[in-house]
Image (cartoon, rainbow, N blue to C red):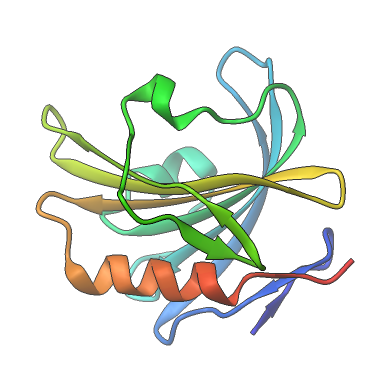
Length: 147
């Protein structure tokens, strides 16, 4: 179980995965974030969020500190037919395929809890491994705001 020391939430870390926390900002500096990255133990701990994005499998939890909330439909994501429930809040579950770089991304949220917007993201390869999506959904279901 991961119990965040900066923001009041917990989540289950899948067996065989590590967590790493970063404070970061968008490329244009319009938004700042606190992020938790979950990556397979077979990979080294990422030194930055940019490095984690290059991993073939990575789960990202983002707490928006300043700037606009994510709008996944504006960046090529399509909502799935069935939403997901995160900490008793129903939210869309999105998917997009990036054919030019061979990756498939899944996202959920943002949900607002305790005055902060939380977004959830899975980076995987095309075709997506069913195990990766199942792990992501389990971690989403384990997320609990404790504030």
